[in-house]
Image 1: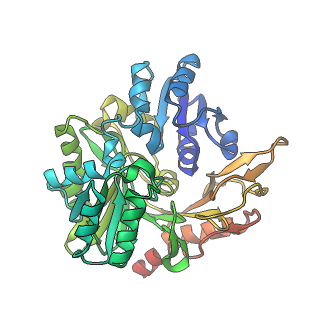
Image 2: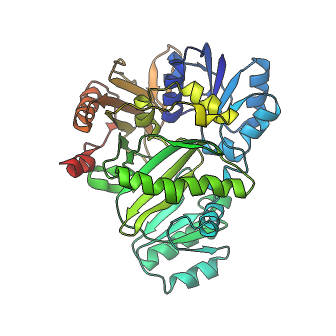
Length: 423
């Protein structure tokens, strides 16, 4: 089969490496991909948001199956367009992708169908939002309604910070039209858990849980990022918690999307907070999370392409989805200065992949001589597996020590919180 994967980051590289294991995968295209993916797929310089260009390429190259991984093309209707052109595809429709593309849609959905989440106030007018904040308790969370490259959420410690965030979003348009509406949300406390799940709109099969490390610096200090590392499974996500999430959150969400006339088919991401009152939804994503994908897929024992096809064909109930009982750890190696200003263009020395170590390339390019150079903020995801979490963390950091590029930065404490929990 000829497979097309839309996207260019570490998530897409992880998906491509997993798809390569399938005996049915003859050829994989990455649109647009990046310099580090070139060893695993043919990179084609067509942007992820160029829906017309993606469809045209798929038709002209007789693509048998397409995987749309990032949020933007899903929200723009990439899967709708590919399916209309006769290309079987993995991913939600434009209507279903609203579960991530609009915070207002997802909050209204959870309220209507009684899915546990933080209490909130939705504002379409800046003065209304500022007035609400006059008496709201702090800390409080301010979210831009639309997509904002994962940066449209501000956890304000004071009312003044909250008001500044509202003004930035609604008046200064720091996130463009995504800030036309804001969600002002109760601040939840407790361990965070990420759970990715395959769903064909009827059946839902969760993947192994994971723990993201969002802050740029050790000990969860510094600015929020797209993710500096992950571990799986998450020790806070016990069998008891998992059963409760399935009953109170996962199945109700799938049924809610059915009832709204936009059944969700694809990878549904649940960002959860395990509060003293039970698990609650912080956010939904309409696709694989990054870097969560880089620890979840290495533990997948089943054939990913077969699962993708079952999701698309609505036969997931009959499909085996099995994960290894071990653990995985991903350490993100970033450019110094990320998530703010940073330099690129430095040569990268990679550690060869082994049975236990895989390096996913997120932000890199090839020069004219074919040398791999840094090309983004988050450059690499160095992932290792092991029989236990301690082994996986140890293996990951040993691999990081053998991987290098100038101005490299990474956190030294990925997995520490989880290991402390297990101790």
